[in-house]
Length: 508
Image 1: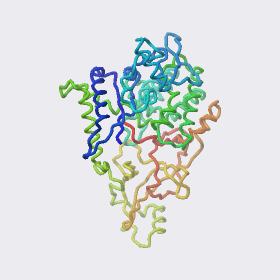
Image 2: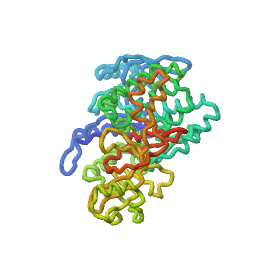
Image 3: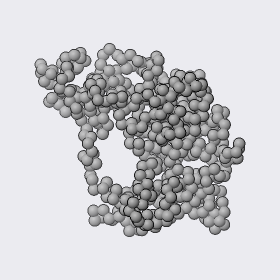
Image 4: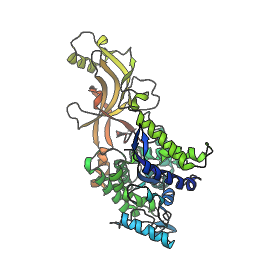
């Protein structure tokens, strides 16, 4: 059964024009259904999301700088220092579907503000999940473009000019895997930064670069936020406890926020206290957001078709997209990426590596290693391309440093550089020759002196790893199925800090 999410952009001048037409069209589709391959498929409308100004329009709510502006709870907020602030408060008095509908109806009848409601949301007529449960916070706007960016500005302001220059160089020169289309910008360019660039700084670069320059209590406090966001963003690396641990981290961060910063306890910070419920209902944050729909809304906003029936135009675009995905059974077959080794190296000297010779002698009975083995520079598995060090066209990207599983223990994590890929001529299995780097300690050891050590240690050692700068003398030969993720490597004076990629499927 297809599920459709609705995105509303308050930045588009046509938003108020096509909104009613879109709702009416979706009502008709819900009744009549969509005909696909001579079958009628019923439409389900899942949720509405967007930035705060867009949700204000969609929910007919007060703006995000007013009292009772939270869609999920009855936190009034206070006016402090010329700003609307939302200090930590727990537990929340939550809005339920019943009182949400009642308050909105009262506001519509009295034409007044009823605990944040200004009227009845136009989306309440078509959503299959009752409001406010069908409201999704767009983390890219709330967490990246708003809260994280504000925190970067505040933390950067507290540093000396010399440290600022050092950090800016480290951020701008840090290499990433080849599929990162946006990397990291220096903090002096924060005015021109994009959401994905903020994400890369927040998730990957901040702790490895700042841990040498920032006072440990400040670093430990902000590390709570970073770890919580990465747990909410990627796969459940801590199993069923993932959302609980992430919520403990984010709530402790919120609770102690006023001890470190003034005037920044705004609405977007408060929204983070509702992330656990959103994660439980809708999954990881890398799958949620409105940026993926902005190109469609931008196309409609340009009015290239010359139509005044914007609702019909949007539904047509959604319909075409839905039919294409329904009719193409195997999308991977239409891509240029096919799983398996490619880019062969016909001149590789297998006799130059003792680890390959030992592995070959143990696995094969023939006497011609050069005829039996074939070398490859790259390998694709699950549509992810891994490079090796013999691939010379990688430029500055680092897609050869990986996390992989031990042959004897699938739960243990090892790290290393892929020197090359090879396979036997009479076998379908492909192997990677890896230069291993051993663990040197726990990343949480850097936070032992902080009050957040015990809480941080539950998550941070699964996200960041401290490894030796010297590789081991012997090489590992592993089957490619043991490769887990690409890793981002930060070169410190005495060690490397390694962090695996959180998610491969976010809009970039």
